[in-house]
Length: 427
Image (tube, rainbow, N blue to C red; front, side, top):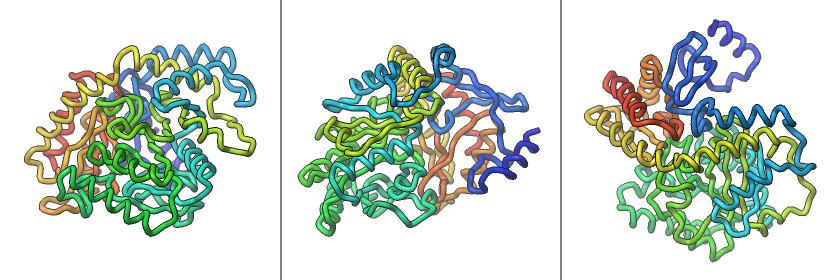
């Protein structure tokens, strides 16, 4: 039956629409941290629909909120007052730590980043943007234009002039051999030199932890150091929190808070986990930036009642159950368990991560070269053992990405780690 669906998929959908696994998987339903396929096989989900299932599959509070809202009204557009949208915006503005914050809802992280770039270029009246190497910001024309990852950049054309900065990857590149303080100093010097050769950019857009890039990150404080240089020139800081927001990193509610010495970002983008699978994204910005547009604007599907109801219920559940704290505690145990599992496996270059955002980078033994074949083999073997994981990495997608729902239990963390250990040691 899955084979027939795969054939139908290939007949009507684009060739470039990626599917995991040699025999693609049809997921039919889920509960808590598990999902089932069309053949009835059960899997522990360590990827959550690319980090979108943030709290749990079929979370009762979200299911109830969506069902009740659907029975009233599903959608009306932003041309009418929308109580769930206002209520969720109030919660997010308060949580953002951005003074005089305004919130605009979109349908995805891509659209959120596109909007942030629109705001920055309109507010600053320019089109030069700084972005990080190895970054990923979405699939729209503008967001692809600031994506520093060749595997996700299908065109060299862009409405923006993009300049790429060092620092998003701690253990690769020309500064990898330096200690953390020296690393930050070298990246700041590189940024300062770059600014001396170009007109002032409108903004720096950066993921606190690079998601598609393989869960890589700089030392804490790098973006605060960047901000000190950028603020002198009026350059805005856009924090792309599409994958890092809502407590996933455990230590902080927002990823940017690891770089908070010089204050919050000017603009924050979010998506994925807030809707727990519903299509919710958005932008938070200071009022003077958000209100800078001098043309009419609406959103047909951004902030629709049913997605706002889901977001409110999901965010309330996350806060009331301290899922950030759970991510910190269980994630800390999981990353150490995976480091133990990877010890002595020559393919494993590094196990890294914060909270429940963990990457296992694989290379060819005895080299620093990516090993996508090994990553694919581990992913397939994990599936056979009842575990779903993701893939990523700017160096030929050889990083295993692990990002389960934030309600993961200690027992489930151990179960998943045991499956991964068997898969890694089988290479």
